[in-house]
Image 1 (cartoon, rainbow, N blue to C red):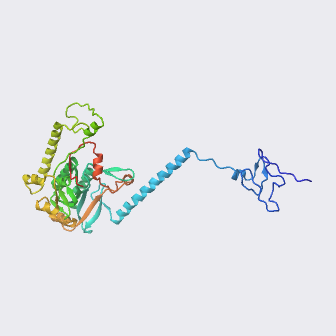
Image 2: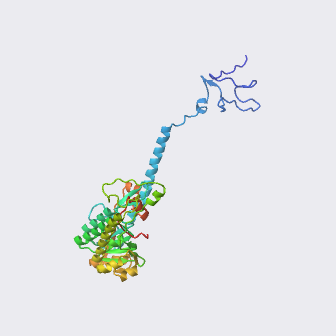
Length: 394
């Protein structure tokens, strides 16, 4: 009986060359037969209408659609954000454990970190820090950006120190070139009211810079101590803007401003400077400057006439400031701590610092450590001219 050829799959022509079997390799060691897809199979026999192995190896899976790829990317991105947030939060948690962060005895949402002094003492000195450019809102970094309410933070910390009977005084550490008049004046008033209502002393420890608005706040305190390398002074007010009218004229651009009164567009940057407008703004600067010098004369043992001689905007070294009675002493943080204790007539004390426990949103926004605003950030957020008590050399 003659050998029969196995039936071919439906729609597949018999592509075997003449003289060769469609079955197993020949005795001479010829390679296995191949299907139309090019894959070798040991048993190319038919099962129904489809060759063995074609469904498993001969067909590629369909490519994922755009919706599937978008969903996968979204899931991966969300997981990445969660992982980064957790990694950012872990150092804060470990730091809190290592520094023995404990809840304040007075309650509230602030915690205390002991940063010095006698750990076994029951009485405390609160250290409150003010650094960076002084503004109502300080811009922070982080994955999502964010902002820190500077005045609100300081108000909360002073309130905590006021209601805690174990706190005998405040060490206010300032490292700032100044900032806006409004924020500086509000903090000055806050410190003055704290002293008046509690009777607790406040001592300033000046860092690298305590100038202009920083000094404005410092004179509200009972005792001012600067480090040997501190830059201070810069008593004065500045109001500045840019005028592009000449540049616009050169390129044929005209200013079109519709206003309700002749002085509604004060310091319009696209119109030529107006002498009447400049006189109005000079009056505002002079009035603010007068308040600044009066505050210095009130807080320091210097007559107003002498303050005005010193208050021409210049900065002073620590030695120069001491000579002119702008500060009381030159020293470091431990000297300021000892001075607060002496003024408060307290014995051994802990030196504590307040912290608000960071939330996950704070970590993502970069507010867990509250990075401070630099000068470029401040000028970038100002939408128009603003009175500043700021040393612009920094």
